[in-house]
Amino acid sequence: MYKIVKAEQLSEKNFLMVVEAPWVVRSCQPGQFLIVKIDEQGERIPLTICDYDREAGTVTIVFQTIGASTERMAKLKAGDCFMDVTGPLGRPSDLVEMDPEELKKMNILFVGGGVGAAPVYPQVKWMSEHGFNCEVIIGAKTKELIMLEEEMKKVAVTYIATDDGSYGYHGMIPSLIEYLVNSGKHYDRVVAIGPVIMMKFVCQLTKKLGIPTVVSMNPIMVDGTGMCGACRLMVGGEVKFACVDGPEFDGHLVDFDLAMERQRTYKTEEGRALLRYREGLSYSGKSSGKECGGDK
Image (cartoon, rainbow, N blue to C red; front, side, top):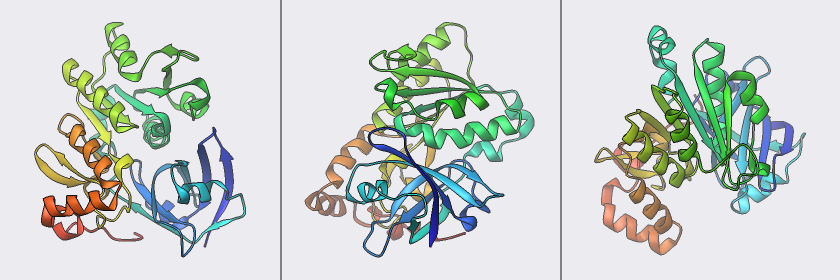
């Protein structure tokens, strides 16, 4: 059992939990995710790691209530337990593997849209701890949905954007990126995490501006093991699976339109059957020999 040591409601549908998971914390890196399961009846829910404390043996997750399982999770309190916490899974951010001397020369802009601020945070924190330059944009529809603002400001220059103009820059994230660049800011890379539609438009802009961009496709994951086929996508004309090949990819190579269309089709049993028929052996990561493991 994995004890919840902190449970906090961030907004109407967004929740933060700190969970005791020493096996995950021992080897996790920024960019990876884990899978939680409440009990025998609960679904396996993949969630990107928001933060971790190796000394305390705890990991922080942030989630949004979008279905029955996450609604059940939202009712858990400090002292309650998850039956399973599996991880770390997925590949770490490639920033962790980069030559430190090269990374020192770069100015990286991180973008967190909505709940995407949660997986952005550990990367920004890691950059700060190692003395590397970066800036952050946190975006949401309204001021009430902005999350982790204070945490971000402690580790990087932080900009806020709200669609309705209730706080910070009045406009969507791509508009703020363009404004910053036009104001003289230079970025060597953008890392964007959030709703798929947001990542699509960020990549359209950064491609035009000539800024290499990495995106995390964790929003399309369902099972998190390469078995369900939910996170199948095309990257540079090749079949990839977010949970085992990612979750991070070159955003300029991701076919976002296909990913969004596939998401809509996957939601029904009839749609899943259609996808299995169309895609054959490439429908799931397991059939492609890409099934990932459990605890590491």
